[in-house]
Length: 140
Image (cartoon, rainbow, N blue to C red; front, side, top):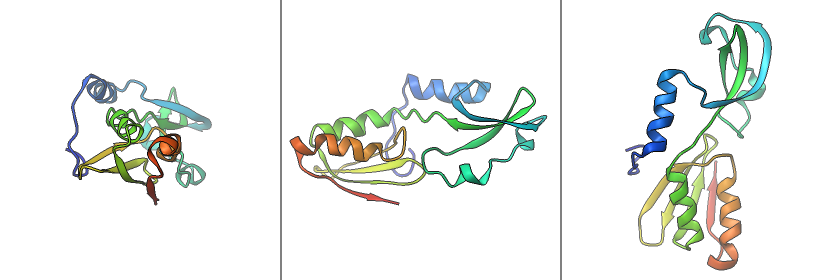
């Protein structure tokens, strides 16, 4: 369980965790910098990336150079959140700058997930509004 929500373990979640442990790419390179490095500890994420809400940016040492990276956030629970909204099961939602979202369901249940990019929950709610009505969304 994470953040008080039940989470399913599935193949995608295991693959992401395994890739992290093996050091395989689970990120996109946003900027390759001119700074040399010997390990991740030598690289600092520039402030202009830290203040952006579009991604939880981090820095890594890639082939001896510091790089700013955007980790892929592929939360299998996001599909459930999307489906609940599009099936008119959602009552209200909230999103945070770390891309975490919480969805309160009409049946009293809750679903938590990480959206793939900031404001994606709003886009999905707007898509469903014609069929389901407006969903109240709180943002941080």
